[in-house]
Length: 321
Image (cartoon, rainbow, N blue to C red; front, top):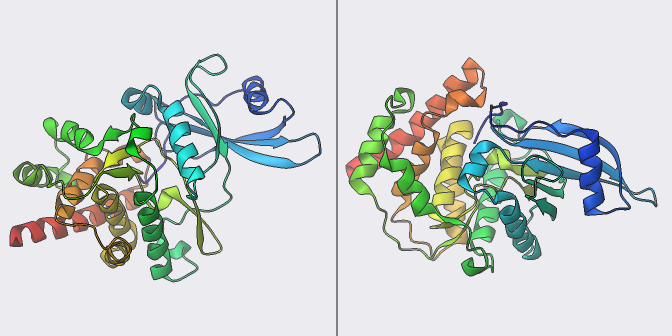
């Protein structure tokens, strides 16, 4: 999901007294030394917390307070994300180590999660790349394959929503005013014709919103993947489709193709029969929402054009089949 904007459902930034209580809950010997607000998506509040141990060692943590949209989808999102990150971190994936989750509302008015701070930058524009594009798309594909092969049983994360359930809810009701700028009527019509997708692949853990803005880089290496509140379970193609769309919107269709080909090489047993189904589903996710992202008119126009390009390619493939 591209864009950052303070929404009515975003929690207020915590005061110093609350932050000191949070730090003490993690480790009574830690001392709060500094803090600052960080970008956190449309509805979440993310705060950088700097601490110091008695021996003088400094550390940085990230506090995430969940917004109204996250809590409507899952009232226990903080505890669930803590559990998922614990399993992924133990499995060796480059995700933030979780330190504490709380939904008691004793310190803050809503649920919160504290994880380690990963020092890295996001790359969401071509001019930010300081290394070859294939290395960029290749590492995104490698992470996604690593996630989809992670040795974590779905019974250990029973709270993850099935991606088919999420998709069905989105498709059930047409909005009163479909998003014409993103060709929503054509997307919905095509989805109604081809849905549901064939269930050819075993369900896996999905990030749910894997795009370049959720990947952290340092010296040309992917060092962390963040923002797991949209995690789900289901066909790995749902994650693949989302990344394909986001890459088309920001880096062009050729970057999306490179990503897809690398991922397929890493996952040779994957059945891609349903890729167009999931491509259209993720395209539908963005309809009616881009105006909420706080984008400049030029950025909004550019991303809408990239989205239309992605959708047009998928619809053309379906029409030929």
